[in-house]
Length: 87
Image (cartoon, rainbow, N blue to C red):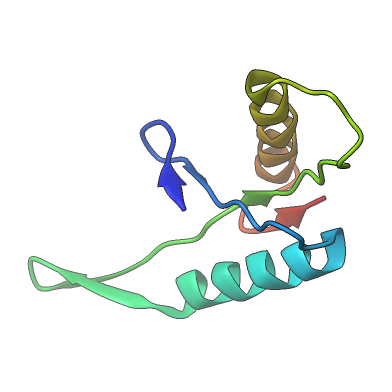
């Protein structure tokens, strides 16, 4: 897991197929949604959107191309209503 940008994080799941990655992202999304944070006496809830891109081992993509493809999935999740997982 690595922070990438202000509010974006990359999670790399070596040897995970799309279904496994989707299940993990959905568990993370739900845990985030259900967590209540306290700040200055106020209770806050946040949500998270996830974009998943599955790199095939025989593909020859640069790291920048990989990040661009997953970023497109993230923005798809945001444009489709947020607080969701897009593959």
